[in-house]
Amino acid sequence: MTLESQEEPFALVPKVKDERPILLAEGVSKVYPIRRGLFGAARFLHAVEDVSLYVRKGETLGLVGESGSGKSTLGRILLRLEEPTFGRVHFDGHEVTRLGAKALRALRRRMQIVFQDPAGTLNPRMTVREIVGEGIEIHDLAVQRTIASLVAKQLRRVGLDEGALDRFPHEFSGGERQRIAIARALAVRPELIVLDEPTSALDRSVRAAILNLLVRLQHEASLSYVFISHDLRAVEFLAHRMMVLYLGRVVESGPTFALMKKSYHPYTRVLIASRPTRGGLSEETRTRLRLLGEPASALTVPSGCAFHPRCPKAKPGKCDVESPALRELEVGTHHRVACFFPEDAPISLRPR
Image 1: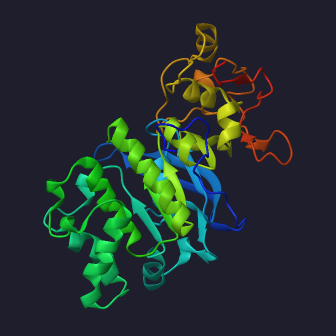
Image 2 (image 1 turned 90 degrees about the vertical axis):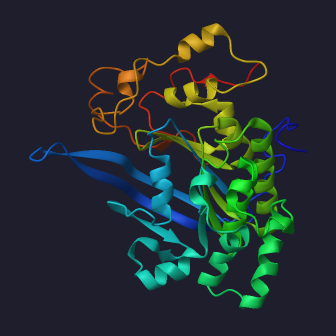
């Protein structure tokens, strides 16, 4: 069964056997100072605001939201490719945000990233043999004479043959380049991979093939993924749990199947309603879910609930003044929402 033929979520996604988090983030924030002109006063862009999350071994956490919601910045912070302004990140018991350069380099082998555009992240002057083998050499994982065979093995894992070894990135299609990027990440035997929009630049059939590949690899090696995407159908297919971000803040989180079946935050409901479905939603439901205005800028985050200027249920004196905390609606469900009025007619978004 593949993405194209799947009727229900999680037909392929492996169950999580280990409840201990391999990745843990606590109160992570990222603020960028921005100056206007030579003598302009500094302004601050709040890209990520007080985000806490965890990922267990063999689990996929999906991060979703519009462009500018802070998804990619958060993903880079988790690997310490960006330094957080506040907060801490732990990987397998190590506080990543406090490691020195030497210790961090040793840990990087276990944490990898696959970017959105493989054409921009694969060195055009290096062959596939050099690209995939580079990490093996850097981390001293094999003697020189065995690297070629190890690279060939990784290529076979992602569906490419040994004929690709001495070719250059421009000789491949977009889907093949993304397979090379995945092989490069796998070559150093990681335990966690951050997937930053890995299928957004691919057409539908290639996208499905890459998602099915990611599920198979997770089965084989108990990999943990942080899957960043605006494609909710892909998140529903791949992720055990998902977090919805708006202007750098988590507005709703929980098990993917439960959240996709019934969500409580107005922003989440609109995101889910906008995804293509076979049955679709009635015009009445779409009208109830329609947002007001345009997204705010991270430079001018509204007071109170950041979503209140666009929310049809916002109440003056409450939503525009106070910032709602994430809270669990029913004990034990792990479904959390940051909204003052989540009980107010939650809308089931599954087509009838």
